[in-house]
Image (cartoon, rainbow, N blue to C red):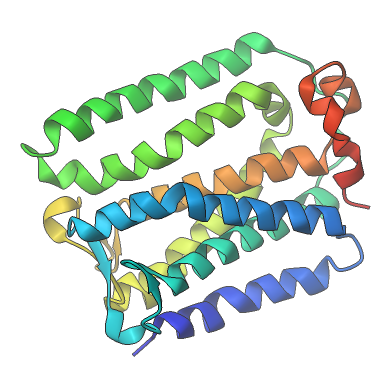
Length: 260
């Protein structure tokens, strides 16, 4: 039976190490440090949400298959999983933009696109807040999906507000950076975690399982999580001085973080 440590060791660490080796000549210390910081921020951002889900019986972990080290009800392995997700997404995005991204030229600044994208995401988030506060008691099956959107959409809206037009200009590479990690996480989670009941979402709070394995909400959650990793990584790797000229981001010297 797969343990939480075994899942991390056999399913998460190998692809991260492989990507590190493949990209070893192109990686900069600054890029790695930024991704590590993103991983730590993600733990701080999601830990209370994760704890709330566990304490309210919406999802939980088989504690007999973990180390037993936890921050309250938040397992150490879950924190490590977040860091490894960030590493996987950041390194895969690095590979995409250093191996498969042709010169795209300067990204045009299109504020209307940024604000429209941000507005659409925030409007959807507002509807989700209504669902969380007013509908989940009457329709408990929407609970887990609504909670997944509640935590991810604000961060997505912020990123789109800052450089949604920049990302749209590189949408094919950004899409590939999101799709592959999202599918991989869905596959391994469906097979080795949810599929073995190492992780469990209470059936009453879910739309059901795909292929009898993974909760239907999780692939979409993993895609959103991959997007939240790929979008800032894309900016770091495809720094466009003309796009950022005169903005507050230009003061951080993002060009120094680009891949070689």
